[in-house]
Amino acid sequence: MINVYDTANQLEQDLRQTEEVLGLQAAFAQLKADPMAFGLFQQLQQLQDKLQTQQANNEELDNDTIQQLQTLSQQLSKYDVVQKLMEAERKVNGMMEQLNQIISKPIADIYNG
Image (cartoon, rainbow, N blue to C red; front, side, top):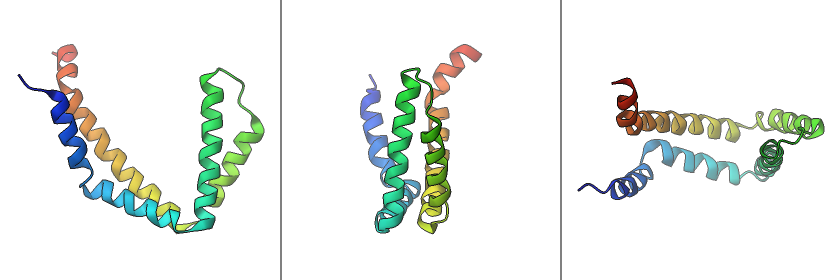
C-alpha cells in the first residue's frame, strides 16, 4: 500500500531544491540585508496580520490601518529587493498552483468523471 505521507515528505524535500524556492530564499535574504526595506516589510506584515484578524472576527476594517497598508505598499514598491521578492513569490505560486492541480486531479476526476 502506498503511503502518501511519505510521498508528501519527499515532495517537501524536493521543493527545497527547486529553482523557484531557492530563488525565493535568495530574494528574501537580499530583502533582509536592506534594513530600511526589511523594516517596512515587517511593518506591512504586522498590518496585514491585524487586518486578517479583524476580518476573521467579522470586525469592521479600520480605515486608518488600510491607509497605512496602502502607504507602506507604495513605499516598499520603490525598492528593487522588494520587486525581486515579489517576482520570486510569483514563480513559487505558479509552481504551487500547478502542483495543486496535479495533486487534486484524482478528486476532480471523481466529480468530473
